[in-house]
Length: 178
Image (cartoon, rainbow, N blue to C red; front, side, top):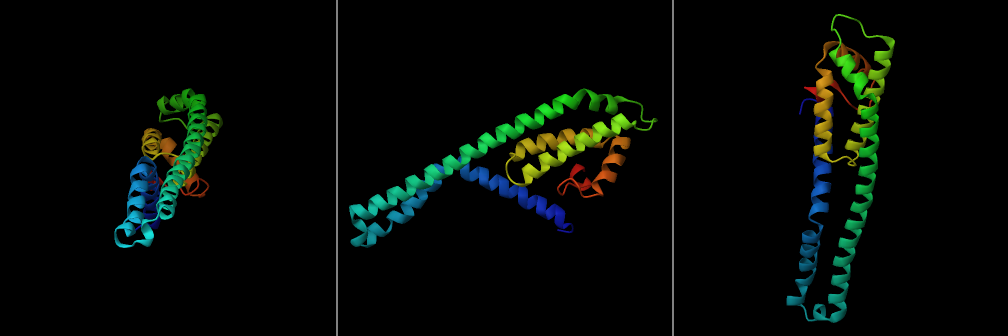
């Protein structure tokens, strides 16, 4: 890859997808782990003891419990973040659409710049939580598609590019919007 930031973004997306795939298939994965641990029973008389089989079952059950408990905590965090971000967007949605629909010939007012900076900060926070794996990739893609709508507007794009040069949005860059 030419651009390491894009490579890092790809790693984050696939890392998050892998994590969510593991959550979705934790029972099957645990069953495979148990089967792999039980295979010695076919070849070793020592491994055929109840103690060993209880140990294998305990590890499998513990693995399932741990993964599901961890996943439940992450789902709770996702819901809190999702609600927070959607509420923040809803609060500024009318102002953002007014900026988007206003004349392209006029300069942005101070209030419009402030609204857009609030929006850019929201987008940066969403991206940070996505990179850390707390936002589902399909949700991030939907949010990114919404960002692209605003990014297509030249005067919003120009301000956004200027802001992104400060590297204050947790690694977001203008390549994400193309």
